Length: 290
Image 1 (cartoon, one colour):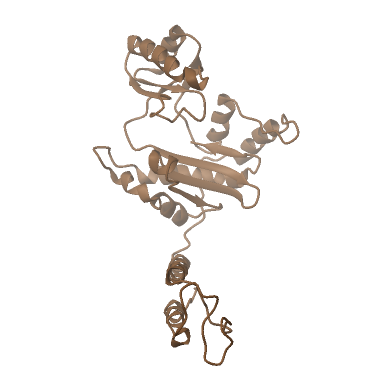
Image 2: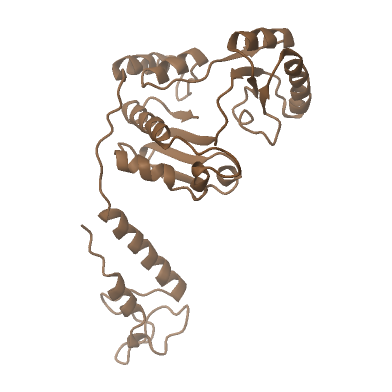
């Protein structure tokens, strides 16, 4: 358990030793010391704002150290050896430091080895192919750009939701391709629709300094523009995951706002946990994005 003398540190900062000091001075003023010299063992900050910022960080650290550690994650239905074989086979196709992007089928198989299923999708060239794929998947469907930078961007026209029939799908395909032409994007796909709810963002990557890093955020401007992400380094415990999904400032939306139903937090935590175990097991996987 950490014992940080927060109040003692605050007392030192406002100690009479500092009488006569000015904001931004290089050090505390002491009757027996040279002007600008530092006193051993005494923390000094050039402004009250910086001192309070440090105290806040210390308080957060003490609070974190006092929290329960939790139990190691042990999701069911995992096949790590098969996943490792798939990752090694894909890595063998790389040339030099080039990254290999898995096909949709390989990605689904890799995730399946960790008990993660994705909604089926199909790429197409013509509107007739789109309609045929949608009929296989079942209406309503979502229409998305394949481009990774646009496939989640409703504001830029990269996604159309709840396309209910063939005529509507044909119109949306034509309109979306016209809208995305300035971006040089033409390839689209249809995907089975998920029930209405709050969209979230989940990524996992291999950082050159930290190793595996898992990041979570609430989809939308809070994440895209304000950087409202939470980052953790696996291996994680069940307590780590529970705190992680509640940590973003926009996480209040998970409880249901604006008519959107609340999220199944247990299912969300299970998904984040499985992704963290996958990334901890497979350093060959450079990046995942959900």
